[in-house]
Structures are given as C-alpha cells and as structure tokens.
Amino acid sequence: MSGKRTEAIKKGIDPSKAYPIAEAIKLVKERAKAKFDETIEIAMNLGVDPKHADQMVRGVCNLPNGSGRTVRVGVFARGAKAEEAKAAGADVVGAEDLFEIVNGGKIDFDRCIATPDMMPLVGRLGKVLGPRGMMPNPKVGTVTMDVANAVKASKGGSVEFRVEKAGIVQAGVGKASFGEEQLVQNIIAFVDAVNKAKPAGAKGTYINRVSVSSTMGPGVKVDTSTLAAPK
Image 1 (cartoon, helix red, strand yellow):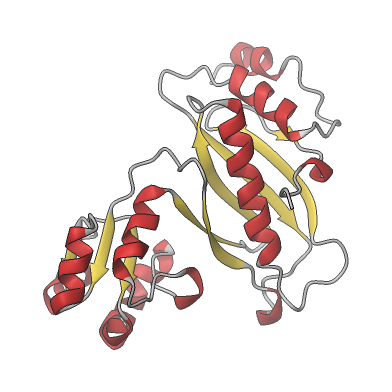
Image 2 (cartoon, rainbow, N blue to C red; image 1 turned 90 degrees about the vertical axis):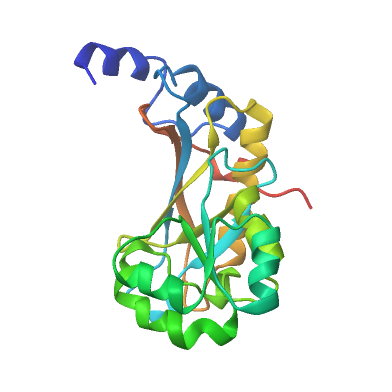
C-alpha cells in the first residue's frame, strides 16, 4: 500500500476516539476501496491471560447475516452419519480413507467436524490439524452426533474464535459489500458470544478495547458501550 493511499484512507479517523459501532462501520466501509470484496474484521483486546487454563476463551458464533465467505467443510463420520453430512452439503466426508489423506498433508477443507466415535482416529491428526486451529472440539460444536446441523451452521456463517497469546480475539464478521446494519448485527452477535465465553478466571475488565477494520483499511476504535446485545 502506498504512503499516499494510507494517508488518504486514514483521513477523517481520529485514532484517539472510540466511535459508536454504527459510525465505526460507516467509516470502515467508506475506506474499503480495494479491487476485491474486503473482509470486515474485529479485534477484541480481552483482560485475560490465556497461559492460564481458567482464562482460556474459545467458542463459536453464528453470525445472523453470514460471514460472506465460502467455507469448505470436512466431516469424519461413518454410515448413516456420513450420508447425513453429505446431504447437508459437506465438501469432504470419510473415515480411515480421509484420515490417510489428511495425515499425508492434503487438507481440502476449512473446518473439520467429527462424530464422537471418530475422535480416537481424528485425535491422531493433532499434529496436522492442531496448528491450523482445525481440531474438532465439543466446546465449539464440531464434535457432535448432529452432523447435519453442524455442517449447515459452518456453511451458513458460524465463526469459531479463540483467544491468542496477547489476550486478543480476532475474526472476520462479514464483507465490505454487506449493508451497514447487517455488519452491526453480526458484530453485536460476535461480541455477545465472546461475552458468554467469559472464563471463570477472568478478573477486572473483561473487554478492554475493540476495533474494526477492513482487510486493507485502517482500524477504527469502537465505543464498547454501544456493543450490548438487545435484551
């Protein structure tokens, strides 16, 4: 990105100000000028230290307006459950055969779902799936007997989140082509999901700072008081 362009898109944003969410989204959308449909991203700085097990934050959020990205779903299942997964739109379905493919380093999916009986097999793929954040986990609904709904949720815009070392949670919550209201709804739903995933060990202020940006655009600070989910 050229210096002039960087300066131009930063113009009109006060870096010291936290904007109401609707205004923040407007500023971000106005500056998403790339030749592709930029992803709108949220970054949340949380008051947790994920090195402690009781301060780990992870979960899944079903974005009300979808994520705007095409998610390829892989499912480890046998028999009737494998057929259910295929019918629900899974891209890759298998058992030992899929294990061999993935173990060989070929991963043709973005999210991995497994039935509980497959976990002894899938567990052996920890070194392959773990570093990519793709290991199925019951906490985020990716180890389940209800494979059909898990596949549909993944395809429909469910977003997994997990706190990183510095206490930051980041996720894509839509596209620049989405309407402002759609993005606001998605962000409020995401913040609500992170709030609900607050761990027992979190002390003091849980959500310290929130900012939104587009793939190529500057970050805009958000006034956290405007992020409460409607009761």
